[in-house]
Length: 169
Image 1 (spheres, rainbow, N blue to C red):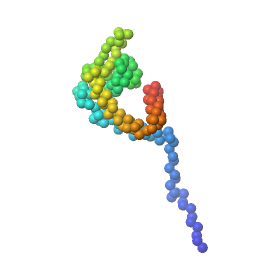
Image 2 (cartoon, one colour; image 1 turned 90 degrees about the vertical axis):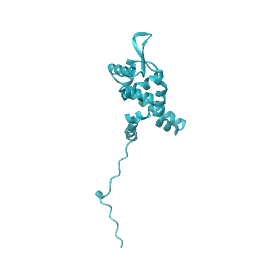
Image 3 (cartoon, rainbow, N blue to C red; image 1 turned 180 degrees about the vertical axis):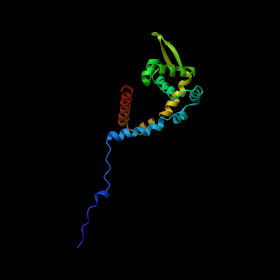
Image 4 (cartoon, rainbow, N blue to C red; image 1 turned 45 degrees about the vertical axis):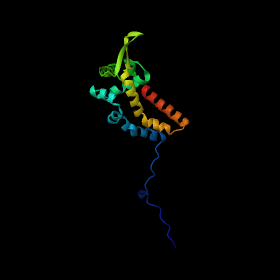
């Protein structure tokens, strides 16, 4: 007579791993992007004129965060830069001052309001910054290239919504 196998002892059977929610899986991807934002990795992608200006004038990543705003949005007031970067007006003014001393940005009087200063990217740094932005965006652009048009539109819509939420809380 064959003896029936006894069921495994509960302590010896590992519990099935809980399945994380889709939300947890998505949010869990965010820390994987962190190396992409490290200063060393970013610095290595900069064209020499931009890197030399940043290094030669002791400019930091905080200063650098102003530049894409100026490239994509055109001349901005210091107040608008402060709002976009979520920094105080004195901090934005300090960042713009450092970039101006380095010759990377220009400050001009707003013709519509002479008390307001407009900040724009100096023409000599436009091409190096565009090159840097394309290099910096390489992983994103390559990822988008793997998607079909509907997926790409959905990804861009989602990324846009996320950026909006981060900006506007």
